Structure formats: structure tokens, C-alpha cells
Image (tube, rainbow, N blue to C red; front, side, top):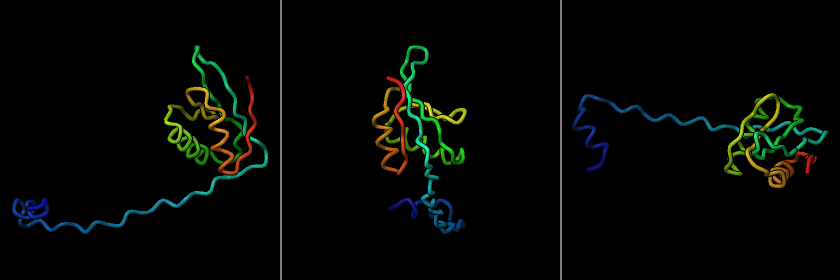
Length: 110
């Protein structure tokens, strides 16, 4: 006896709602700029951080990019004041991810 049959026995008058097709999120095209984005290393409160600045597109696109970087690297971070702040020194990996997406990057610091 599966779950649907059990629910029909418990609630005989209930008619199940047909599941609606979920809207598929379109692959949003990020604005590719001519100027390179700056990927720099800093220590904040004694802990290493990687900061990405210089994106000229919309903030929403930059937030999507921040989320994708954090997910791929499995690290924490935030989007604040037009910059992506990633916990740890991941400049090389971030530069590889951005170059694969078509962005030009510039390594700054150390």
C-alpha cells in the first residue's frame, strides 16, 4: 500500500491537486566586461580572505556569480559593497572559474 492509497483512505473526500510544472530558471547571461576584475588577497582579523572587485554589471548578476563561486569552492563568503568576499585564499581557483566564464581577472597582492 503506497502513500497515495493511505491518504485516500484517511481523507476520502479530498481531491489531489495536479502538480504544476515548476518554472525552469533560465540560464541568465552575465555581463562580460572589457576591464579585468580584481582578485586580491587580504587578511582581516588575522584570517585570510579573497576579495573580488571591479564588476561593472548589475548587482544581481554579481550576487549570482558570488553564490556560484561559493558553491563550487564549498566555502563561506558574502557580497558586500560591490565586492565578493570569500573566506580563505582561493585566488587561483577563483581566477580559473572566472576565466572559464569568459571574465578577465587580475591578481593583486602577494
